[in-house]
Length: 428
Image: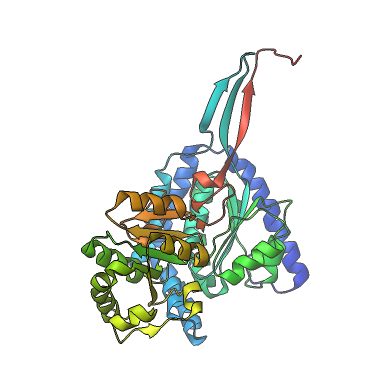
């Protein structure tokens, strides 16, 4: 049986997934001991291969785009799926940046000596084998594979059916890097079928896989959380808020809101709900609304917002709960900072939220009270990204609180163990 072509029979899928698991488990042992130089060489060679094969990747992506368009996939998902020469070069650059990061494996997090002379150190170690399930963004193939490799982990990738050809073209370049560096090809594997049964098998492979990372819509996340027998790093909806405080600078608020919403509407850090203090709504909102509409953004607002601009569509209760990932923005006027925080707590997804204010006390109250993985003051929510945090890239934004929270980068893909050195001590 080959694992390089589409598999359809359920028995073959189960057998194929176990084969991938065995290979990944063996590769993870090798990677856990691999020198930093070998891992970095693999990453740099993979980046070179991506640039050398850019035309092949674009050809593969054109197949996926054509199929997606024929199915009537939304503009937001098409934007996530599309690769351009600039996006391909950015993938390669991301791999090179990850190669330039400090290797977390073996890092001593803390060390101390006990009165009896025992010397104890808490040392970073790889997680092992990571299963990563994602949807329409083929660049996740490069990000996920490279981050796992740098952290000494093997990975099994399962990209979305809509990005099948694009993801495999990128994965082939990662394989080139592994071979050039003398590392096992099984260190980065890709499930060679779009059959959803393969995901079900992956979620039960606790003998081979140590962590599952889902990256996609709510349906995918809920399925993984319900079915997985393996610990999960959850990346839930990016229902992102900005609150314009009564002490916000008008120019800053305008520029931050427009960038947060319109720079790229399909990313998880894109603004979805804007909250504005009632005292400054009439000053802050008219130009923001006018410029957003000029850029093609639909505005949905409460009654106060509707009175400010007749083009505003009435917002419904569902709008406060919706991650649009499209050029649509909900706007609500709130009485004060506590009301804004209460709205975020009620409707938010604990992903990324921002306050725009020149009042440091208000900023501190907001950032202390809002229970999200990322909180910002006076900066675009589009900075909610591992690359922008200096992590090189990310697998996703974890909205859970166990082990990893926020951008999941190299350090978050490690655990630790205790190394204890003695000189003959025995316990009384």
